[in-house]
Structure formats: structure tokens, C-alpha cells
Length: 343
Image 1 (tube, rainbow, N blue to C red):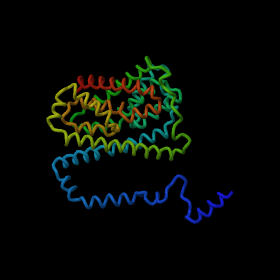
Image 2: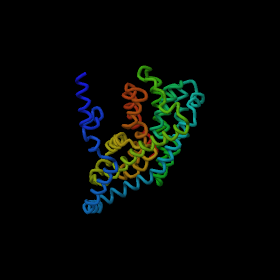
Image 3: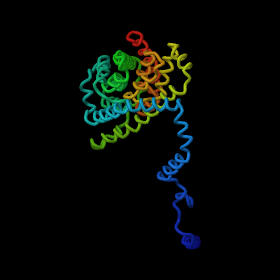
Image 4: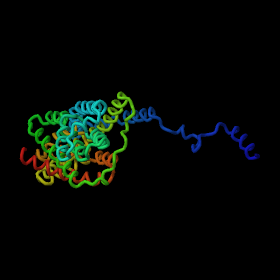
């Protein structure tokens, strides 16, 4: 009792108590967003002469030109793809796919693969849609074929590819055939060799229970932030590769058919560019052969870093650790085979 009485006056004497776990002055020392912006602008003004000199170099001008060109060309297709993807997620019930697909998995796989050609959506949207299909009873082999084909051969992606390669219309056909071939092959492979204990049942949809308007705008905001960020990173990487890498190195890499294919396949996995925008990045890699560019376009929408994380989160790590390497190998092989025949 004495302790309480002593503590109370002490508290009143030293002013209001601080929040639990906090320290005096902690909130005062915290940097707010306006303060950070002000400091950044002040630093830019003070360092404008070095910045102007850096931006005036030929190498930096080349970097800026490539970055702006790739971003501006790809952004309209990215936005359109995100809007259509969100609309499909909201207004097309998953039960529609279950009714439309054949009951036999061997037939359902190619039907689901072809269905990806008429349903616009990026790879960010295809994973939750495939999870919803499995959750509603669609055979996993067909759902996985749709997961791989939808972001690779939908109308937005093929139109963007045609715009990015105006002098190479065969690139559009090659991308369509190679991606569909790999999607169906992976579906059939999973049907033959896949085990039920490798595929964790997907969790309940994140937006289920919300209104259609809320779900639509939540999907748009999520996909714009994620896909837009990866687009900027991809454009920066393409510009850096073109401006910084010595021409002799690129000619050496592009001159080796095997190395050029593997280099762009790995680059597609690391860059994780949205499928609505990757054609413009591929078109900027002028040193590489059409077949190597096709590998970049086929691998990227099927397996990259963000897709691996999303697949592991939706279907489980055991699934992703088996599905991703097999997809990578088949995507490279299918793209090379198609490129040799058509390009």
C-alpha cells in the first residue's frame, strides 16, 4: 500500500506517463513522411550539380532512354490486364470452370490450357484463381494447366507481344504455341506423377465475404502495386544491362546459343516481370537471338521468384519445390523446340 502511495505522487510529479514499452522522446525523434520528403528534396537541390553532370553522361542518357521506353510502352497493357483480371475474379464465378471442364483429367488439361487464351490475367491473378478452382473440385491437373497458360497466352499478353515485336509477327505465334504446349505438358505430368500429399488444399480466398466492389478495387490495388513494382525493376534491369554491360560481353553471351538461352531463362526468373510487360523488356535485348528471347517470354510467366512464393503460399512448399523446377525445365525445352521450328 505504501509503495502505491509513493508511486502515485512520483508519477504526477514527473508528468504524464509514457506508453508502455516506450522511452521518453521516442515519438519526437521519429521521422515523418513529410519530413523525409523535405530532406530528400533539400538534398537533391544541394546536389543538383553532380546529379546534372551524372545524368548528362552518354551512358546515363542511354539508360534513361531504355528505361522510359520500356515503362511507357508496357504500362497501358499492364493496367488493362490488371483491370480485366480483377473483373474476371469478381464477376466470373469459379463454379463456371468446374461445369465447363470435361470430367476426365486427360481431356480437362488441354481444355483448361486453351481457356487461358480467352481469360486475360497476369500471373499474380492466376495463382489465386487456380487455388479457387481446386477448392471447388476442379482436378488439380487442369487447374495447374490453367495456372500456367492464362498469364502466358491471353489476348492482352499476345497483343503486347505483337506491339513489342512489330517486325517479327512469328514471335506471337511461337509464344502462344510454346506456352500452351508447356502448360498442357505440365498438367499431364502432374496427372501422371503428382501425389495428393504434395498438394496442400488451398486456403479460403482472401477477399471472399467482401462486396464485389471492394473485391474489385482490392484486387486492382494489389496487382497494380505488385506488378507495377516488378515492371519498374524489370525496366531498370533491362536498361542497366544495355547501358552498363560492355558490348563485347553481350556479343559473347549472345553468340553462344546454349549460354544465351540459359542466361535469359535465369534472367526471367530473377526479374519477375508481369507477363503484360515482359515482351517490351525482351524486345530491348537486341543482342540475343529470337529463340533466346522466346525462352525469356515463356519462362517468365510460368516460374519466377514471386510466382514461387505465391505457389508455395497457396499450395504448400512441398508442391512448389517440385512444380517449379519441372516447369522451368519444360519451359526452356518447349521454347527452344518451338524457336528452332518457327523462328
